[in-house]
Length: 196
Ligand SMILES: [Zn+2]
Image (cartoon, rainbow, N blue to C red):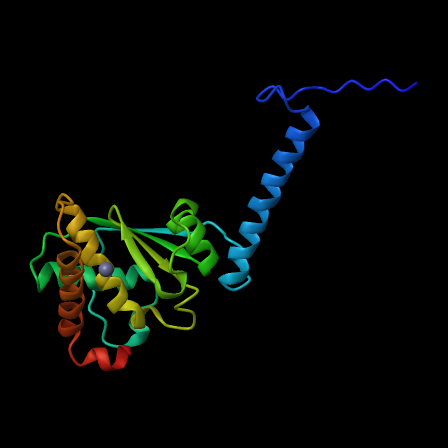
């Protein structure tokens, strides 16, 4: 005679413990599949943590040619110079960049799983609480000088946040960021034709 003791799940005493274990295993399986599915959808790249770059009180620079913009710090420094000196805006003393090597990283670590599904294909950058997040998977091959318009737009959002992040309408937020980007490009003048 075979005697079998069936243990009960502590959370649900009506279910055998083995059944609860199967449910947990199934949930892990579903979560893992979701992770893999997102990775496949956004380009077969696995999520990785972003590289953080903080630019604090940079020196004034005004790029004359694309090779003058060698790094994200150079690009932000040029944008901050124009915002301070030409536009007289009250800019934050430092700005933090989070650089994601691919869209899977951008979606999972930048946007967060709680915000999925998101329009990963059509979002290159965003700013949250004054921090600029950039998906390098969509800017691959471009020099930092080619990204000044995107970074200037996001820096406009960072300026807005530094002023107290007062509640406004979306059209105003985007309009202000777009205005900052346009003025930065305008201040670069003829140089911008070389930057693009
Ligand atoms: Zn925007």
